[in-house]
Amino acid sequence: MGWSRQRTAALLLGSAVVAVPVVVPPAPALASSSQASVIEDDTHLQADPAGTLARMRALGADVVRVSVPWQSIAPAPDSARAPRGFDATDPAAYPAANWKLWDTIATDAHRDGLTLDFDLMGGAPRWARGRGRPVGNKNPNWEPSPAAYGQFVQAAATRYSGNYDPRQEALVPGDPGDLPRVSFWSVWNEPDYGPSLAPQGVPGDLTVENSPRMYRRMLDAAWSALQTTGHTPAADTILFGELAPRGENRWGVFSGMKPLVFLRALYCVDSSYRPLRGAAARIRGCPTTAAGSKRFSGQHPALFAASGVSDHPYMRWYAPNKEANPDPTNGSSTADYTSLGVIGNLGRALDRLQRAYGSHAHLPIFDTEFGYITSPPKRSPDPGSHGKVLYVSAATAASYMNWAEYISWRNPRIRSFAQYPMYDPVRPGTANDWGGFASGLLTWNGVPKATYNAWRLPIFLPDTHGRSGQPLQVWGCVRPAPYGAHDTGAAQTAQIQFAPGSSTAFTTIQTVTLSGSGSCYFDVRVRFPGSGAVRLSFGYPRADPLLAADHDEIVSRSVRVALRK
View 1 (cartoon, rainbow, N blue to C red):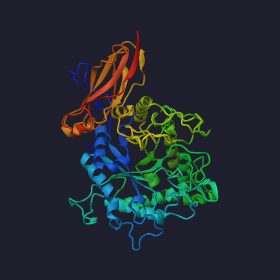
View 2: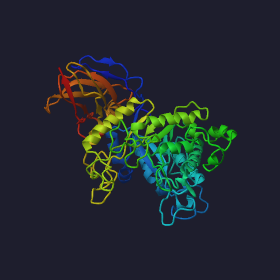
View 3: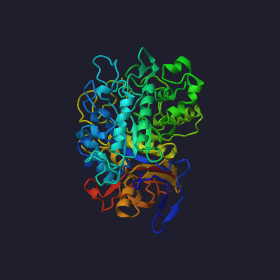
């Protein structure tokens, strides 16, 4: 990730009068030491790449997840046949205009010091889809050709290898016209979800998993293409999964499959994590014998050597510490879910999947999509849910987001915390989908929601009650601070502020100085003079060129504490 934020939990802390700094011990060993901040907003990146990336940087994001849809770059995407003589591995064989958006994003992100996660996803061009799609259905992700997908991945990985000059349409190492290198890659998006990959079930027997077979072959092809072009796990971050966190008991053609059901079939094991055999293996595209299982890890190296597994651990309208069980929307057990409240399911499953083939790898988990849909703009309860879908207010979402990030930070298996999207997607209306997937930090027309500053300056107190004089734990993150440190060469500080009782007059009672390691996080204990409200305050460096988009001084949400004598 370069200078742009290697997460650690160490910090320097000033005393209450901030005159003599003292070294604060590192965060607990169980906490993550390298949690990155991921943000995504494809719609606004398409409309205004430079402005959107600048705002993401001002918010303090490390990694910008970017959808790179195969169908949008491929030539003749609506044709039944690929163009004659088309070499799909050569980026110059694609229409130059089709690459322009991603060339611009790569160039602007490199200038801003942002890391890009290019998610190489569908839909597939028509000429790369399989047969048998239901008449009238427009899903562009029906049985994508693994070979054709691998060729597209090779073209993209070549173009963004750091050695490709688009003006010469050739690899020209060291040329000043070379596009920046992209070093963070994801393979497809939510393959356990019918709209993203279909059919989910085996045609003729929709109770048998089919999408894992397709995804395994696509992942193999993508892995090979990335290795061929110099994008290896030693040099880059390469993720697979991008899992939707829940699913149905019956997945059919276009429904969602539970993510752990998907992963077990992807790794060719049964519900007890034993390799499949015979007909059960054959119909899922798996080895049918013990000898075949011994070759499995060598034939599918991404499943064992990738940088990690990406998950979208949305909690819907629930608090982040637990998922309702059974799921009230479908009566299903959450044992095979991977939402944040049951994220331990995923870690345990990944380890068992590795052990089934003699591997002792502990694949990290990357959160690459997260957020809370808010009401407004959504109507709550959702009118089509019979009172079961209860979207939360923006203020509650802000509190839940900070709590979720603290849970994530404490889990050493989780390497990132995500926000999707930056803006609510559509203007609220009267349709059932009132406001769309409205988990943004800003409204559709750019007004910050309560979640905006909550993401920019997270604060969480695990315990808000105590005795007078007893220190309380204050955890937080000054997300933009590492950029300020880079831009000015100076250590960045934030203030822990307190307002007594019901007062709104905040004063600083302690200052934290974030270390030069690139971390935004701190974890300290503070003695408060009594009951009241706590918040963080941070001043952007005046040299920061992004001040036009943000105020000099920013504050977090406030958290109330209650102390008794």
